[in-house]
Image (cartoon, rainbow, N blue to C red; front, side):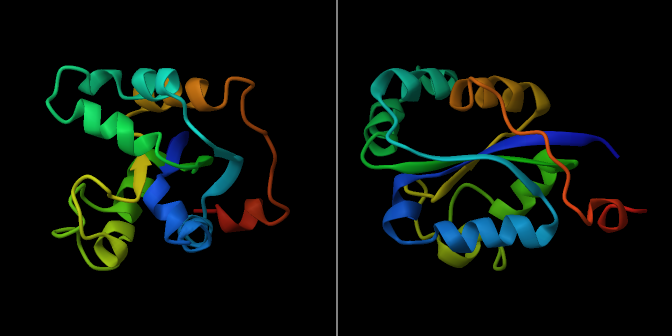
Length: 151
């Protein structure tokens, strides 16, 4: 197993709908360790840099407008295979077809306003974490981590 870090953004719709606690609870209950968290009002420059991969897509302007429309919560987590674990918790992009039990499956009804972003690969996570946590994350160990993570 590989210990990884992943970025999660609880998007403005998730903050507005008061789902922050529910989402964090799901991440922690799974066993992921919070190593960074902050409430952020993303500006246009940060949003453009974060979503640069979508710059040529027709939905890019709407995406920028949405992600900068209100505060979001940026979270960094650490855990074994954290990237795939988080993506399984989050569910597919379109909340209308996401599996029940996932965040989007339980709370999402839209493709665009889909509550949450999660890194999709180790390289992406590294880039995204450096954007949202330029001073790095906190390296700490839970008091019960040794027996919780034992295989």
